[in-house]
Image (cartoon, rainbow, N blue to C red; front, side):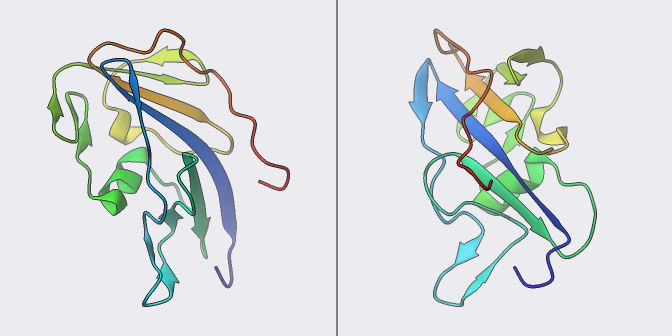
Length: 128
């Protein structure tokens, strides 16, 4: 992104009833029109890119809006019910959509039964 002032990356893991759900490639990117939004993915690795020409805060909810998937304390897309979520292995409470995105967070959201093991970190590629 030309003129980028803010640039960091987070990793997002999603689970529904203990099964991993893929965060798709090209969220926030229109390849035909040749543009990308400040919150986007390049591939299906779960890495969320935050790139902005100005210093400001971005939330996980804003990323989900770019994706077109509803997220709040009791909703993950079509799933309705209590969500469990973690940041860097620490159990969180409240609405995950309000989470401020920060460099190298490992964010895990589980709808229904959580995974057997909750990831607490992610091995980001060199340079990210």
